[in-house]
Image 1 (tube, rainbow over the protein chains, first blue to last red):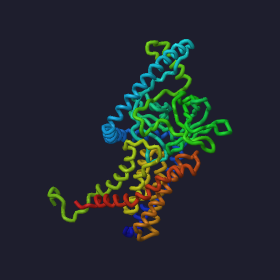
Image 2 (cartoon, helix red, strand yellow):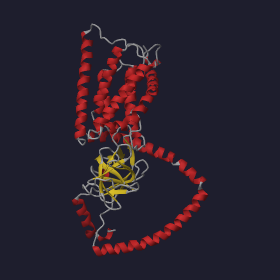
Image 3 (tube, chains in turn brown, purple):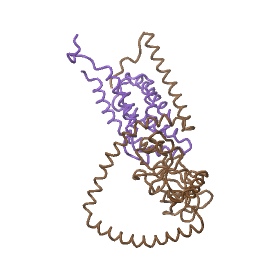
Image 4 (tube, chains in turn green, cyan):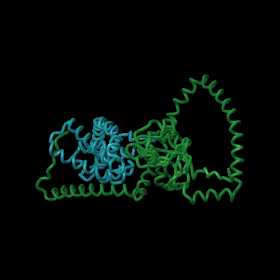
Amino acid sequence: MVRPAHRRPGQSRKAQYSLFAAYVVAVTGAVAGLLLAILSVVDPVGFAQLRIASQEVAAPVARASRSVIGSISGIDDSVSAYVRAGSQNRRLRKELAETRRQLVATSSLQEENRQLKGLLALQETDKAAVANGYLLTSTSTSSKRIALLSIGRNLGVTAGQPVRGADGLIGRVLSSGPSVSQVLLLTDVDNIVPVRRARDGLPALANGRGNGDLDVRTLNIANNPFKPGDILVTSGTGGLYPPNIPVAIVVRRQNDGALARPLADPAKVDAVSVLRPYTPDNIEAQRARPAATPGDAP
Amino acid sequence: MNKAAGPRLGEPASLWRMRIVPVATVMIASALPLMLPLVASSPVLPPLGLLFFLCWQLLRTEMWPVWIGLPLGLWDDLYSGQPIGTAIGLWTLASLAIHYSSQRIYWRGFWHDWIIAALLVAIIQSLAALIAHPGAGTGRVLGLVLPQIVISILLVPLVMRLTGKFDNLRLRRR
């Protein structure tokens, strides 16, 4: 690095003033920027449209790079599938036979279940999604865990809707733009999900750690009831996430709760569904709909 | 004076290229992580925009006015997912720090540059994470960004080299 040549502007008044003005602008701007940052932490929705606009620009590139790199990363899978074709074939045959037997058993149970539910006049809450899309990319340089979803207001996605993959809960929609939307992932530090243990319904709160894991804490019990392998599902409390979506599996006990790993890995999940928020009016609407059109009731 | 005849001997580089190349590299580096098909579960990628921003300033302190962090920081905030304003403030403070250090240390060498960049990256990334998560515990938030800071610091010499290459492109004579 060479020594800067024109550090001092010399005798020229104009040059001195313009240098001084640059410093004044910089300091004022820096302070204003930090105030803006605090403001946008307090009210994250206020600047969402500005950010969505820039992400609409990034989305086409992300779509293109996803299609290219997605196909590249599939190559090793197909190669190893050829190599292991023989043993895989045998194993799959065995699995298929077993699954058929189970399917027969399950279908009779399902039928019985349906009849019993009919007797009780219980309605399953509508599992139909608002829309389906896929996760394009995420903020991989920031400590915020926000992913970009490939669909937006064009398919009815609005802020506050839960997002799930086939394996479990992914997160919720933070803001939606014309054709993309932001999803706050389950693992974000600021994302808290009311859960319950699938086995016995023990209520707890799952809180992201920001590094891909979740902290799980019970609400009221002093001793630590969790065991590795406990499955946690959403409880439906709080009126955002519908109940009984798989969330996480407990990995390890901790001093004040447990460490859990999300069941749906956003990096591996292919398609995600955007659901309706679990609010009273939505639940009512879904109960009313099968009565109006009995043809498409499940 | 026939301009159509092609480049003239000793003619300086195009003014537009001299101005656009540095700004464009920082802007592309800021937007690049959001364009990769990578859904990360922790901050795994180094803040490329910040690294290029710091390296340009260390390489050519005089090139930009000291307030250049305001527009470039806004651009980075739009793509990084941080609360808008974080990079506006922190990047501008960083360029003030670099300008100050260039007055104090006249003959900066490779190690000076690396240490300054390392300190600034560590401070900026820690403060940005703390601003983004005011409710969470300080230790946990810092632990979250620590691996990223280490990777970024190790990448500084590489980015400095790349910046040098872009600088050659910027100043190449026609």
